[in-house]
Each structure stands twice: as structure tokens, then as C-alpha cells.
Length: 96
Image (cartoon, rainbow, N blue to C red):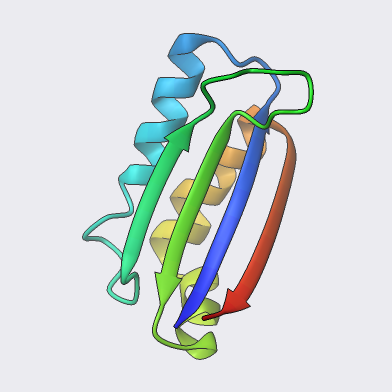
């Protein structure tokens, strides 16, 4: 199993922007076959070092993760939105 975690810092972390962005990430559920797990959380503490939204996804294999990266819905809908609202994006991928 491959876990893919992405942290997003929004340029303008208003309640509305957080909700819209969380919903955009959650909209991948059911649209991308290779997703085995999808979880989205909004930061509660909002400290200076905090990121605003965390995305955790899981895949059966590295090949599935790579296919997800170029999936039309992810690449055409989700990534453009995230790039338009985020000031910073970091990720980690690991096998478990």
C-alpha cells in the first residue's frame, strides 16, 4: 500500500476558501478508481507553522499513485484549483 499525504497552505485561508477547497478535494471520491482511501482535514489550531488542509490518500501500488497523478479529473479539475488558491504545497509518499 502506498500512502500519499499533501499539505496545503492557502493564500487566503478564509472559512469559505477552506470549505470550497476541502470539498474540491473530497470530490475525487468515486471519480478516480485507483483511490483506495481519501481523507481531507482542515487544521484546527491555525498556528503560524500550520498548513491549512491535509489530504491523505492511499493506493495499491506506486503505479496506481502515478496513474492518479495524471488522471483527467485530478489533473484537469483538482490540481488547477489547488494551484490557484495555495501559496505552498508539500507532499510525502511512503510505502506501508
